[in-house]
Length: 111
Image (cartoon, rainbow, N blue to C red; front, side, top):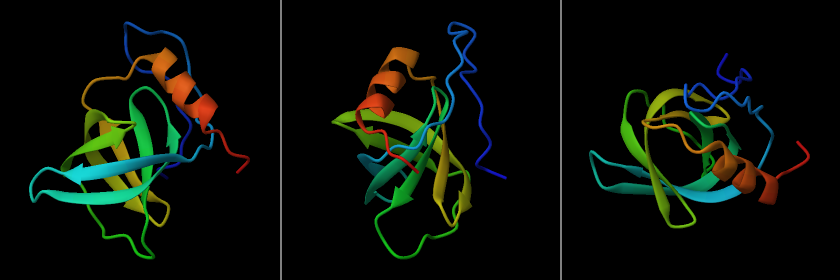
């Protein structure tokens, strides 16, 4: 369903990146009500990511404009779906493949 592997979709970047499990500490800021959710990025590619809120429950959300903050850098995105695993985000602008590879490589996990 939402956990389908895909690579980079940017025409400027033809290099394919596969989803690899990671655990990047992050914040998800919901722009419409100034709400900040602490959590982790579970996987990330240039145009999408999965954010898991650090709570026992996840509210069903879709089409919300958000900002994903990783290491002090904000990445504007939209929530495109919610599962028990977290919120799948689509970035407004693709993130540079080297940046994604660096982040995922530093915080890579086994699962």
